[in-house]
Length: 546
Image (cartoon, rainbow, N blue to C red; front, side, top):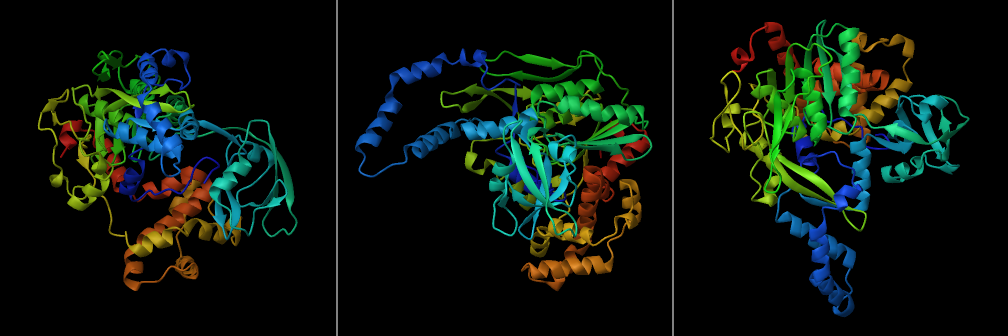
């Protein structure tokens, strides 16, 4: 994990990701939360405050109620209950929640810039983040942080939250860390000046073959378009990329304008990309701006049940205009637009003000009448079989919409892909999930015993040459048993292939960062394999949609 978030990557079961992200996904206009113009459109709230009825009730409760009441909690629960009557994406955000979202969506936080894991109650650096204070000071992958500001943090029970508080802080403030490196017995001391650390929305960009690039975007935050263009440029100018696989699996969305800016790279000027409309909001059309800088020929967009909002806008525009192939599984189905309104307590009301529609006129928002079950959709799809069998997909809206080439598409429940890829749950045993939790510390310990010069020196070579030996796998099984994971011969056999793959992927992650991780995983990914197949076919999208 970094100072900002957990870096553990659940790649092979995106269904779990969808469940976790359901309440956090949104698409909104990119407005600052404390903009004065936002305050000016809140007269209705001021009028409501003058009536004072709710405040009077809370006043009586506070002054006269028979028992002591936590008024802050009571008010929060009242607000939450009120907004639950609207839709699942209209929410109140506390000042703390708003600050966290600002860090994620604005693409930076302030700290020392490391990604770390806990190994035997010790903080171990996975990688110093590029351009951050730790990298500049000479901290290396594998270093163990023993002290922070002379206080011992190794060998004691310390939570990730406590670590974040110690390492993060205002830009320019100093923090002293004591580092133990390799087999050294003496601490190295580094005094680091905290700085702004970017939170990247583009996880990785590399070439799948001589003409096809791969880019994975994890969210649509403020710098996404800029990061995307910076990733595309070397692939086109230095690697010869002509075609693109854009991976939006597990991407919960974000800012609408970042999605439309990105889409403008794929279309000539004036193409309708999406439009929004609401009860008090006039229809607004978002069209391609004509500033496509690179000649990207054929496109595949990868989606799954964790792809939502801005991800669905991108997939919907590509599909409706027959610009490329959409491959994977049905998306989450989130077609509502939120705008943040600042509140007097420093928090914000994120309120749904309109719906968005794909170029063919589809609104892909799922039904939310039963809000209690809304976030269980991913689990429901797993159990009703649609993640393994596309014939089990039930269209919530039978209205037919048509793409530019006359293909029939539907709204009302997400974007249904042109080509379906079933989820693989064959390895998903209780043993697998228990053992997987110990992959990162095991790999970190194993790498300490290896002579670096004997390992492949590039991600490409690592994918081709490195094999998880029987001894390495046996050592892992022994390690997880020592951690209290009970062995089960049948489940071990069922999960062995996937665990071996994950061991290799984690080693590649430490050695070659995200490029190594994704090269290993994508080398065994049926969606990526199918994407390459259709791109190499040279046939129009309609001929490959079955």
